[in-house]
Image: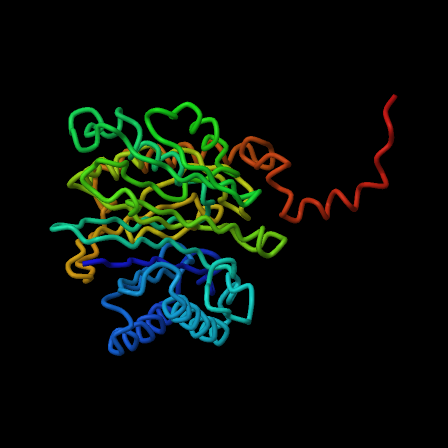
Length: 370
């Protein structure tokens, strides 16, 4: 059977500040999606949270970019926003950048990751949710999962993975894309995706001749950038991703392994600082220290005729304790830099923050130096 899994998120109000989602918002979303399930619009759903982002994970048979599914998500976020306003939560509705829904939620603020695929005999998948960072934060793990033999042993020893994967890379500044094959074009691809604030891995596909259909993606990342939509800083993008695993794909442990390194990402306080990405359990997905450090949660599921069996809190594991300890050490080191780079982002990445207003105020006071 062909199924679609849609993960759509939005910050519709933080509690308190930017740290977490109030239980009343989660309950409002559950009621909306439960009603949609009763009406057969959804096969299944789960309402989750990561930091201050409300996460809607939905399975259905409507395909990607369905106006019905996107309208449901939009209406759910609007209903949660009304509750957030009543509770005077911080930044109520900040990711909803328009009042006029036109059939597709893309470009309106929320982040979207959707996969339509033929369900296998056993279909494990992981929903990754990040807070206080940008879409490019998924570049490193996606590369390591699907292209790095030091991470994914199956690329070497499993014949069904040995030929590699095809990557869809987006230039999110110029709104264009390119498809690249690994391992053949690995170095060219790294030249792009290493610049994670501009070039972002959007989807990963099997190659022709592999066990899985080459036109059905096996991983997808949300690539919306709020500052490009709003024209100014309104909160970091807080990306989400869906990754399928096993049986012709990287094993679950290979999908999770990249997160054992607390690598540096952009975001953190006011979306303007570099810091370590910390893999945490659901209960620890509250961003408090300097509104961070950036967090990632992983919800594991088995898909069964469209039903989402789970979730398993995959980072709720002592195997990641050392990663979290190291992330705290890196956070401490980076914080000691205060307003200096490389803790604060370089000027070109500060263009959509309040910094330009400071520069405008000082412009007349600059003098030419001979």
